[in-house]
Image 1 (spheres, rainbow, N blue to C red):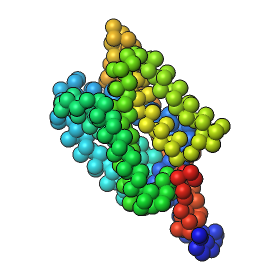
Image 2 (cartoon, helix red, strand yellow):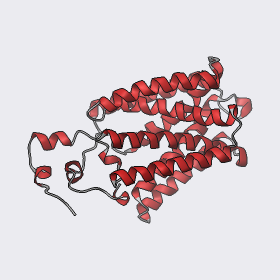
Image 3 (cartoon, rainbow, N blue to C red):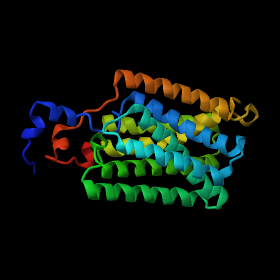
Length: 281
């Protein structure tokens, strides 16, 4: 059932203002390119802080978590999508998600099979609570603090899950960096094809692809950063991190100027006239 939609369709300042309130970008090619770059930085930056700077798996999570919390405070306080702030949050949460998984497996000795299942369950619970509370999992309507909280919690678990699942696949299949990247890219392409040709659910297509970009980015990061003797290109974690951060910065500046990834709210959803189902994501 719908309620009165007059205000949602009425022209004027209030209606236009509502269309700027969504806090996440439109899902375009730019979105996926930056997302993969962020996951790569998450892998290489975590290695850089742990190994090259000698901070270790114990101290690094505290520092990165503190930076993430500060950034998210500003992200939550923003009234609309701000490319630089949003993608800084993604970069930091990718590092934190990686460190959580690595700490559990490397420091505490938790098997990768266990961490993969735990993070998958945690992500499923997040989705269940999100939908039970909001009756929608649409990323086109992240306008309230509660929805944004669910969104960022889901993002955190996707990075942690992607790290554990990617490491588990790498250990079990022993594919190597480049071949692993091809496998995960093929899986993402399969999901996209299923969505376009078989009408596979839009929301689940998005989140499955989002999880798979984490091991894809990690495989690319390892391939670029690891020594040639280990099958990599030998750019190192510093070189790889700087390279990808520069590319991310360039794309974010471009999107800030052009606003090509700014999404408009559904006018009915913005007014509270109706709520989307997961299949309308």
